[in-house]
Length: 367
Image 1 (cartoon, rainbow, N blue to C red):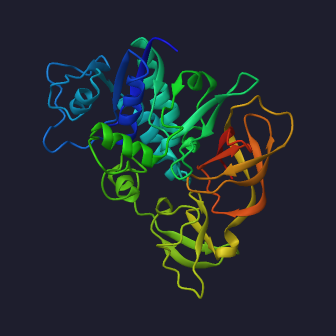
Image 2 (image 1 turned 180 degrees about the vertical axis):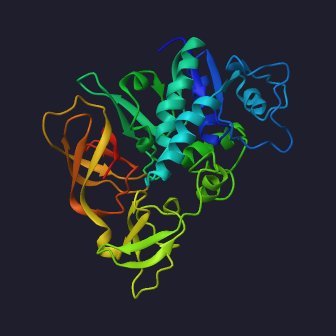
Image 3 (image 1 turned 180 degrees about the horizontal axis):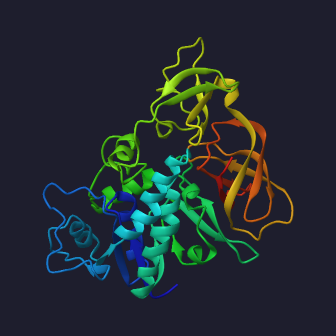
């Protein structure tokens, strides 16, 4: 691999170390920091774009300037390009996030951001700047099978593995992606940063939802003005009304807290119906499902002609379990679990792996 390499830089320790490693492997490295419109203002160095404009969508940061990312540019001794992703982020991430909650689903914005923003728009900008590859600080690996297909593989750090979030990347995107931290543990990354004197902008870990800086998702949804208090019945799986909710967007499948329905055993959310404006609840044993249907599947191998055994992860912190995936028409498939699983939430992404930790496919849980 020769030529220019771009690195997506957030200001955190992972992307900082990823860029440091690449700087010592390749001669021509550039950083790219993309703007979402939801950044926090730095207390000592507010976001000032002196002498530059975002109208063209991209400009080079002054390494000696006051912008927080200038410190990263100086540490790495590489140029950093600032990319305006605000319109795309609003369209593909924020609008999708809101629409899913309106539809009674549980969105997964990180999955969409990686496919549409980071390895979508940002990767396109990297190519326009002459880069052959875009790297990130994900704890994951890329491998190629004998069929010349690219697969995302779990990172060696089982606790930090982030392969799940990359399951929607296309073959074209994977062909030009790099994950320098895939063979490292988080402890090794921290040790290397300390040894080399690398200072991230923040010592804390990145948030689950980067655009929600304070409060929780309900505060964010309320701030959009698209959600109003709309009381409706909380019902059991048999249809019996046992309480009242203040809006279906306040609940997700599997949720236990906030139901305020006294009983001998705790209730869990089983389903959400925004059309009927109902929240269905049940006891712990009712949470389990033996199958689910996936839509908009991204296959990392040629779509199989029949069912095949896999290990399926139905959310990021879920331990992958044995299952069978059966391809259907129109980029859909059925997942049949060998043992029923709890809290299978529509809107989340189910990711199927093989026994070698390679991603086979990823798709959205629909029902």
